[in-house]
Length: 475
Image (cartoon, rainbow, N blue to C red; front, side):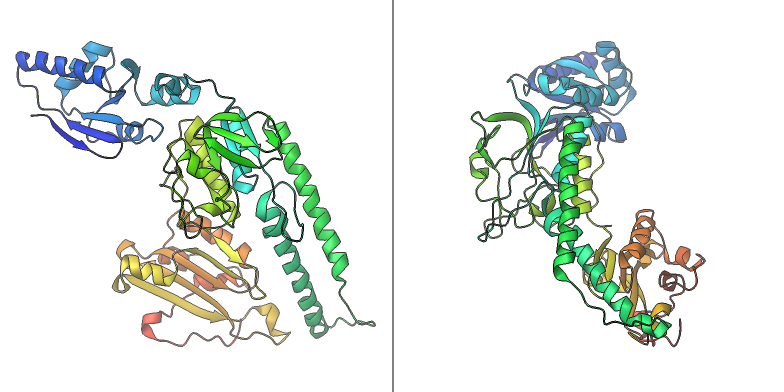
């Protein structure tokens, strides 16, 4: 007997076995009925990864998946379609083919037309609201895939009249000026240490804030211009205008007379979640009323299927430039290239550029305990003293290293934490290693570079559970 299970946008039907010729004709009639009554129909096997890939594609919504295990079904579908393999996909009563054909139809835009999304003339395939790192990455990737793209970006002046150019928080008031000012502070510390290493200064060294500010702003200005040139070279239409939804597929730009309409919309408007005045209510997008953040699923899709959000406005996600860039690129590839890879929001390497830098990747200890349980974790840690600090005589045993290992998975490293100099450079490499599933044993078998700070991770023996001493007496 046929069994059906419904989800929000999926109907799963498990087809009964075919026992004789009479049952075969009955099933043929049932298949024809399903084709006529469902806009998207996927004939699948319960164990086929390609079937899962096609049926899980959120660009084909309201999918009916018919699980047809057994050669009799495959033979019958072969007779009807000329296709021997599964998935066997029908859209709007038209036979599309298997996984590759379906993904190609999506990439070429044929899928959207069959789904009725191409019946209306749109000005753009994608409109990106917000010219930050994530929005720019997504727009350029979509344009590279042959889509017509617009970027709308406008910085509302602060109460003091401050505004800035294209590039979002990172370039203008975040990562770039922050790191340059951090380098300024490090240079000051280095000059203090220099006397201990034999350097002598005849004059007192002072700092000129205006000189630094001018240099930083000049560099930021060059980046702003570079982004505009890059969009132009990628054939992305950039408009310095405030965007507001008029209706689900229509957006009004404050500096143009006509509203632009788009098939897909991406929202990437910045770290303060400036979502209250862009008409999301008119488009039907759900927003957290307390903080303005937008909840999305694991594919950055909002409550409105054709509207997506990435970057700092996402609820419960990292507010980091590289995360937004990665999410933007992957989103464009899923939308317009038939790809399926999603952004990894767990193994994210990041650094805080405080005077003593801090870097991390994966889970913090508290979250790891919550997910895996204290009894299933082994946490290794150690203090250390960088060689460059020893002669200067500062920060002895103030630097710290910790890894969190999952005992149920061969002590795979699920959390990495580092407090010390050059944290960004150290953490980046370990982030790649964690993506590859590095274990404690592999770290132990790695030859360290001496003398460096990062080598501490190749020789960690003390666990937190042991309560052993973690202080170091030398480099």
